[in-house]
Image (cartoon, rainbow, N blue to C red; front, side):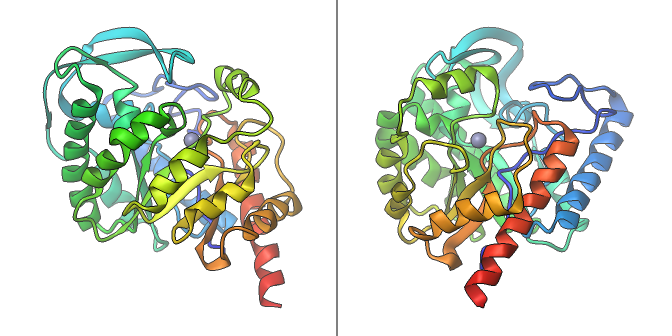
Length: 340
Ligand code: ZN
């Protein structure tokens, strides 16, 4: 019980990409880049194992951004037609590619990465793919011109990819849906439907990560406008509880999410964010343990997975390393208390 995991990403080594930057440009090219990505995955796996993380990821070392890494493998998404749009209900601007035709995978998108990571760890392995709603919110569309239809088309493509990744030995497939906290009406109208289509036929565990975003300035400012209690999850959790998704990942450390909302996820595994990614301050194990203890009032221990609030890609490596260790050590403290 209280097995630890991370939301997904870790900082990249400075020899691979510019540190502390979202959409960081690669420092290498061609064959050297491919080799550098693989080396970085080895380091990411090793650091998680050394810290004592139980369910590991590849740290998302091979993608420039959590959404665009997937989109680059899809025909119909034109990266030559980049436009700057406001995303997440215009919270911040991003340069995004344009959908110009029917969506089709050019081939396996992440198969090589998953095969490589799987071969280099014996721990349960989780891989993350952006969820359909978040993808739709992170590009321009001149072809389908209908968000639900576009989301269901992406869900079909994700599902093809996911079934192949599962066959390579994936233990958990996680879909990242930060957009679920922004478009709550759409979650009810088609967001869950799209998740179901994306995970159809999978036998591995399935997870969805919802959050209030990385610790970048635009997100920190947005969070300040959300009031004393963040109740967005109140609308989405009952829908997720009734869904076929196995696990829900959310942020609980330093957030204003009322933890009693976790009880709305009855029957699901809950990945409780017990490490803040919006601060360079490394939590003490005791601080992590305190978040886990509070969450235990609403989630049974066998269903609670201590986790990071969100991806750690914008952090300094040393900070992320410290947070990994604090996460594992904090979980160990509470585990000892429960088995005493
Ligand atoms: Zn997140």
